[in-house]
Image (cartoon, rainbow, N blue to C red; front, side, top):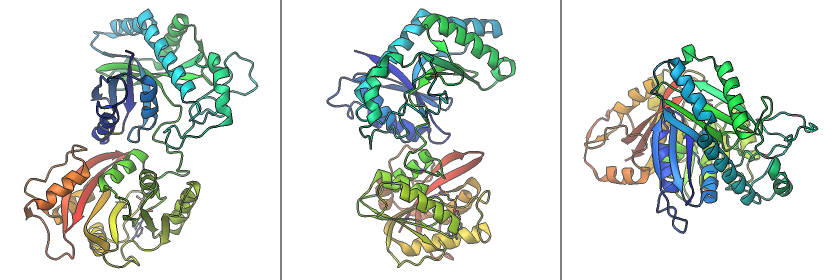
Length: 459
Ligand SMILES: C[S@@+](CC[C@H](N)C(=O)[O-])C[C@H]1O[C@@H](n2cnc3c(N)ncnc32)[C@H](O)[C@@H]1O
């Protein structure tokens, strides 16, 4: 039985959600009707590394559909960096990258990928002209000038036949012949590793071992090497465009994996009315719509230019009739009481977008307004800064057994259901006109800032 190792890169705070998603997709249960699965994963250095045995073609398609990850890689090598001193470290690295065994694995992986690509070529759009990895002139007469890559929509959810896809089989022999090394160092090794020289030396080794040509400008594929204080990991990205770059969003706002997590936490059901009262470019609504079409989505923003971008993004999607956008104040909404089932909102952090009044007044008014428009039992999934989050949490009711922040450990519906039954004994300030029960809190790193998703339910 074939066994392949992969890894995905993930943002800080999203690791356990991504691990959950991977487990769900590749677990024994999910894999019924496929060959037996051997699934092992470990999380470290912003990566989830896992091994799967079974029907590889099927798994690669599934990998391309992951929503909570940044990029997916086929693993070439991964070992503990326990060498003593620079010389020993470099010797081991050079040895590994030129060892026949490493090369064999890499070759096997490339063959698997080629097989998968040719098998799914009827379903994915193949772009032969504009690979982000490659800007090489199409007229180049080099042997491997033609490039193939999976389109941005590599999720295989909305895959279509494309005229170019027929070319794939003809081009197969030319695929994966040129490469480039990308070396990234984190931690102490950054101080003494000369990345340029190391990339050059490694490229020479790999080239000699594999008969692949180095092409720095427009390679057919990339070998990514990450050296951290504890591990050395190398792999080949499955797609040149990160999986986190959603093809259906022309002008993205919030990072897609974070938006996806918020949508999962909102636990949207068919027929629900979902509101984002500060929708910006509409990322959350578009992510939610791509997850569940059979619901009514409403976006509001007080900034007209944001609404216009959101409108463009919505037009970019194939069907927009379920996403309605309004230019209005999210703190004073033109909606009836009890008219919304779920609120998802990425509120101002006072960094790029600012609260119109003092932050505590702003958030109290916000919670009051959300309380007014939400149905009983309706949930509010709010992303805000860590600072604002610690100001909001004391205003919520906490149940006896529910005051922790366990990233992704619990699935939203189960947690909400169990909490509704539990006794409430903490929190809530009688001065405010809202009663929300705290459900969970999840740390998210957002660029340079630190945010928290708070999940709460209207009682
Ligand atoms: C952090 S951004 C949201 C970004 C959005 N999630 C995206 O992906 O583009 C916060 C948004 O809240 C909006 N906003 C701030 N105060 C508001 C208010 N009182 N009513 C409606 N929108 C407001 C801002 O205009 C901004 O677009």
